[in-house]
Length: 405
Image 1: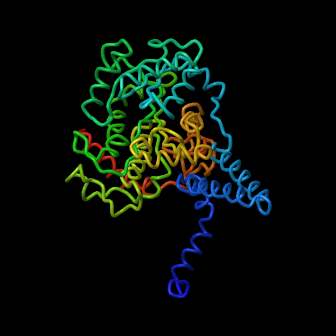
Image 2: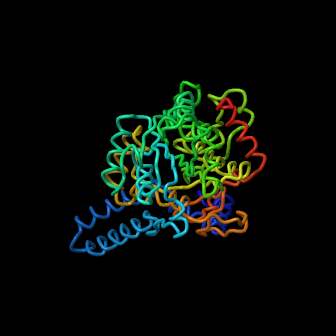
Image 3: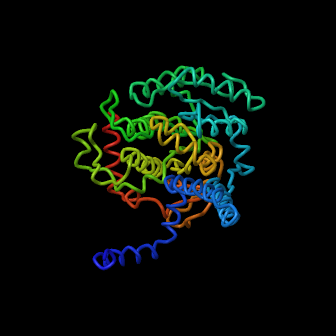
């Protein structure tokens, strides 16, 4: 009955599905919910195998193990590891990188890898105690690294624009032992700090917390540090910016421009998205558009990346989801080290001058403004709205207004 009544819809969906099969498979491969469901089904498979061992046990167990092994391989990004080109590796020695949220998870592993390549690192963290602990761990884990010399700590609370401005104007220069930001040169800026929560709360700046921490504050920080980033790179050729985004941005359609200038604390039209955590999805859309804006308007080598489903503290405000992910799906998600690989690929690789439209999906080439996953260009799963010039203009105007710029 359902098939008859809804046949036109089913037929349209079927045709669309076949026409976009590669895109669907790519989306599912990077969907944490699918990974979680698969893990639970595999747990059930184990139970069935145990209960009916003599009849279907061996076959069920073999399928479960094979599925688990394949999913682990997929979760690891097909085993892809970022490796700097020889020329780039030599250029990176002595450069300066600023990593937000560098005390744990992907940020910590990013900082660790950079230190192993003799890059000086500043961890931009909210908690001084946790930041100092991370600095100590990095000094212990990376041979030759001295805390306070090769890796330093600067305090910033991404939930407060006042704190972000203080970081750029005072904390960072003081951390590096200079008088002002004009004396600082940044070769790599990694906007990594993030928050995931379905609850709607406001910051002291009257902006929804997830959007403030994931986008507005990183946007403000990047704008303040942009002169220092442009002075970076080899012979002042310009530094790099990496915005840690997510495939979740694909689930939202955009920002309502009608709400943009009127009510910043309600500047997101939730009717234009379908998601469990719409603010998170919209903030990740902003991350992708942020990188596109930096590349288009400022000529900066900026990239947005999807790290994949990673076991980090991003779910710390949702204990139930965190428990399910860590208990049932630990082996099926990436480790923080694996999750950092795409970020590192964008920092290590050589940037091409070719336009984004000329580089095929799946290429390793680094194109400013590109969206990457598993160390590959991932344009097929990027929202078209992030490429639209008018939408990008509206996005920049809204972001600057939210930052008071």
